Image 1 (cartoon, rainbow, N blue to C red):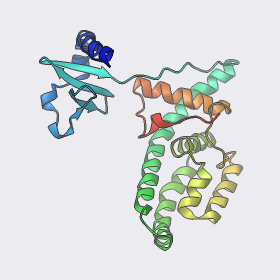
Image 2: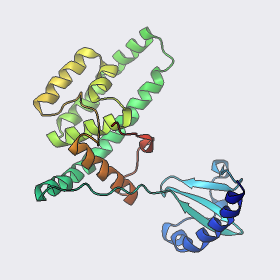
Image 3: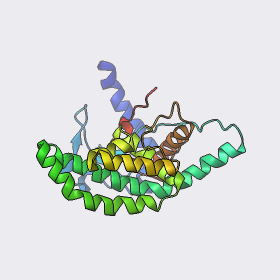
Length: 235
């Protein structure tokens, strides 16, 4: 504890020197210009504003603006067995860019529906799902039909990573077992197994996808979805 109290002023001093140029580059404002009701307090009692877009904490120490960037998770690229392997990795990255916005929308919709149903009894849940069924079909089935096979695979993998469930389970939860069965049949025709869960340790495509996600999040090309850092890969 004493060590932490001694170390923190040193950390702040280092941050003032190291991040002075970052403040100008990122367009960071003084702490007083951020909404005061959104300020937080760290474990040392220091007020700060968390900039979600920049993934950084904004402090003001002795009249100076100090930026503490979030820790980046560095992930090495997978070892490529040959040029074809590397080409597939780059190809998968392009598909990720196209699918990611659709995935974010679908994930938010799914979480909103889960929240709405949280306090409902079984009968109310059935009625709620029935009322939403046509809307979900109109919104998702057409968009998924427009995806290529690889894009459909990426979408299924992302949903599995975010929810901890396979896509078959998600569809069954929202639209009933019969519908989920037919979605799985359609998926298998297009070489998409909706019952397969995301596992970067056992699946080569998942390993590539995890590397691409971490790289794109770290570089800022893609924004992590809420809870993305909580993912723990099964062994």
